Image (cartoon, rainbow, N blue to C red; front, side):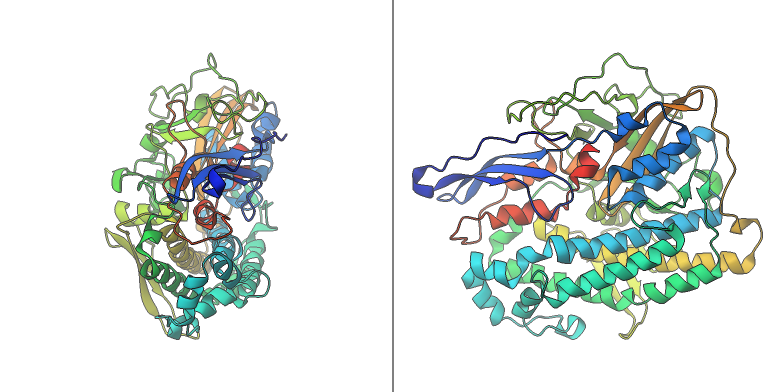
Length: 564
């Protein structure tokens, strides 16, 4: 179901002021239209609206279905992070049944989550966001910047192999650039590793409540290891490329640090469960994850308690194509506390289509908030959470420093080395992309460590090599929630069951936060606010709005996840 977006923009004041109308925004997942007003004389951006223009209705499709269908139907909410939705759905059903997956089942899920990140992070950096920094785009929008790039040496040339910044930009060119083509090759290799355990990608067929449905043994892990070790050197080079590119723009013009700027508000549900902490998964959800849950406001950690995080989430619909759901059943958390009326657990999906109106309804995404705050989600939020909440990995290849994340990359063709992402002093489009590069290294190391764990479990044998815990769907009414994370961040699934049938099912995806419209108090969503805070730094004689596009794409929005 699609909507008609806003009327065509009017250009005024001899071209000094005009509306920027990106409809659709290309190189994002899902159907996104973005409109903003730009004053080219003042080099500022005014009002901005992010519109999810398609509704698919998976929440309503699930109502009335057998609870065991939830995993396979809900994963279709996104064609990129289907694994994250599958695992999250399985966790919700497991919580309803009072069971957990056995250790080998958890390792398999961790592996699938990591390889999904290894597919999506390079796709973002080189296929979606990367072309905005390529030679053709930079030449067209800022010839003076291209001239500077041609004469600027790349500090990390010994790592990534490009002597000049201009060479990096040339190799980011769509279709023909080496970095673009290499990303296609490496993501294919990550897919090959993923399907050895997941069966297919996207939408794995082996994830099920209770664990996984396919046999996972040492042969499987050895086959995946052959592919994953090739990512050690690749992740080194990815980090080096984005460090050099980011620092080049800062040095060229300090105002680039204001492009896509925003508050340091982040939300993450945590990722990668400790398979040896099975007993605590239900009693203390999120506590045993190697990347901790976290709610961060203005750069300060508020809580890493997943139940507190869940209780603080609300969805608002004043600017969304939905009717209010007041009067539904009241849902309580595991401690018996009533969840807020606007919490996803109490929500009902009541679509009300109409024409887009920036002062009224204009998006099929709700406005998800945490304690009233617009929050960013994504791999960048996971790095912030890892840094501030004090998490790491079992073998210590990833560790928190309190203000950063230190990673020990094993040797490949290049020698082993340490890299460290540090909490930045400013938050903007460039830092989002830089963080995504470091998050790629984090996912690679988490994948490697889980392969080693799987091999160890297979070697030792015993009950820990079981992949599945039998379960029965309860006949009595029950409500439960699962939390997980995808490449783009926070995911939660909320289910109400009665007589073994789904009464209500609700999904919160990462872009339900990051790509949200204004809320009932008029606060813009994170991407909308970042665009409005963006100065038009690039000379951009054609007034293409490249600074705005760089901001939008730095969020790596998935509007399918947002509107599902």
